[in-house]
Amino acid sequence: MGIHSKKKGLLVVLSGPSGAGKGTVCGALRTYAPELVYSVSATTRKPREGEVNGVNYFFKTRQEFEEMIGEEQLLEWAQYVNNYYGTPREFVKEQLEQGKDVLLEIEVQGAKQVRERFPEGVFIFLLPPSLKELASRIRGRGTETEEIVRHRMSAAEQELGEVEYYDYVVVNDRIEDACDRVRSIITAEHCRRERFINDQPNWLEGM
Amino acid sequence: MGIHSKKKGLLVVLSGPSGAGKGTVCGALRTYAPELVYSVSATTRKPREGEVNGVNYFFKTRQEFEEMIGEEQLLEWAQYVNNYYGTPREFVKEQLEQGKDVLLEIEVQGAKQVRERFPEGVFIFLLPPSLKELASRIRGRGTETEEIVRHRMSAAEQELGEVEYYDYVVVNDRIEDACDRVRSIITAEHCRRERFINDQPNWLEGM
Image (tube, rainbow over all chains, first blue to last red; front, side):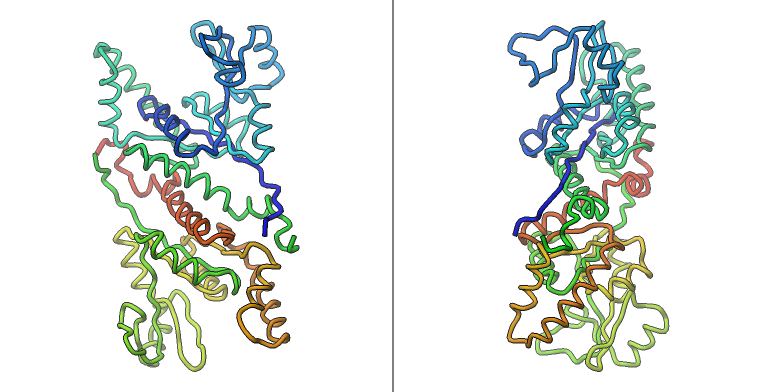
């Protein structure tokens, strides 16, 4: 009764403004959707106690990382505090070819690069329940000055404008509901007619 | 925290070749997805013991039904054994405007009419796990002659060609999985970016 399947996995990109709760939703998805593979980043920063190469990060030298950039081996990359961070294309590709869905949680600028280099991905924009809630999350983070809060708010508002490039919008009102929406989007994308016909060309031949 | 929503419901059309198990999946969905509203057909046949007007069917006279046809009040209709059957547009419209998702289970010819009259619907094509399984379901139904089985098989094969007009394909391998896929498709469709922006134009204004 098994379907002879050439099913390829999906690259699912979860992004959205800071304060939307990407990290929290992504963490909950590890429990809620254990069948997903989580993209592993490459970085030039030194491993911390207990971090495992290929699990937490792919640890690279600056030279190795710069070669990866030059050879277009990264779906996106950026530099923070003198270290490079990026998403290796190869790891994602291998998982997809094995039929596994890969989740990539990333901020808006990185997602933009991924969209250019991997437009066949499924792009999900995570939103907090309202702008007011976004403000209170940004404010509630700690003891930042009013100026920093205003700066972050204006950055978040700019990031919100990116919504128009995404396939889906998920409102993060309750974590479980947000997880269910992400999981549903992945299930539905596998059922899209074009994808079904690509993935299972042998259906009509009766296998 | 509530989102000021103008959310409209979705018309979800579940169709597919005979033998795919539309009725079984639809029956299971009543338990699995109780939030869905099931479209109620109009018919000219006489009510049977216990059938309630507006629940099981909208019971109409031939004259009333023909007026509905003339006034384009039906999303689809057909005549079987001297009785009319059809899907009243008004009932569907009312439910959608109340933000409810409506499920319409219908054979392939009827779905084709609905597609012409309500292209904004979400069209799901239900498939049995394989052609072989389809044949055995058609065969297994009873004591039909080989000729009737062959005739049904060839009709089903023709219906399969209609898959290209559908948005989604759901393989009915296990009832629960098929139900989960249908429910996921509905959840995902509500998250589509275009729909989110239409349904919740006030999000950015902070409500």
